[in-house]
Image (cartoon, rainbow, N blue to C red):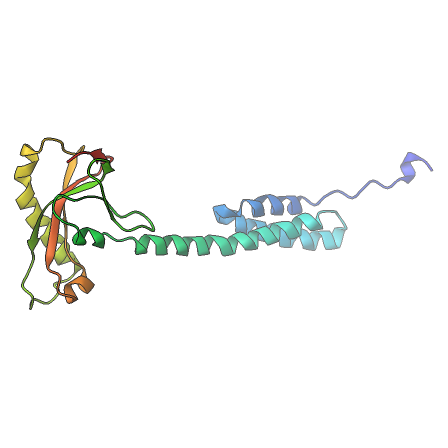
Length: 199
């Protein structure tokens, strides 16, 4: 038997290789679709030509399908986490309390003023009487910020240690809290350029 009598191994289908590569990188979104398409094309070509690469094509398809399921699920979970974070706990705090604002999957939290914090509550006021119906999210938010701005502007000049680029903030009750009788808004300073220490 001579070297010419030995059949050369079939080459691997290029679409199969492309399917595996793009399927593994499916978290980019479009690559998952490409991995699926390349894998299907590769299986059809391999069936006709007898080339190698069936395992690569199947692996690419499987990875693409897995990413196609995982990416939307992860997006939904992230959105749910963002929606679940709330600044409502700030309304349960007291004047002179320090806090960190809400972060993804976390509510706002009261923290020690001796450590790093995002905000400091300096005032509070009653927004309306007990019989006043809820005016809506935007009106409550705008009203709380407007009144808080008027009440706290003078404190900016007298404050000894203020955050970098201090922002006056106002937090009013949401509809559920309003329905339970809450009418108190909290006013404070927040840093939007990093946490600060002290009050």
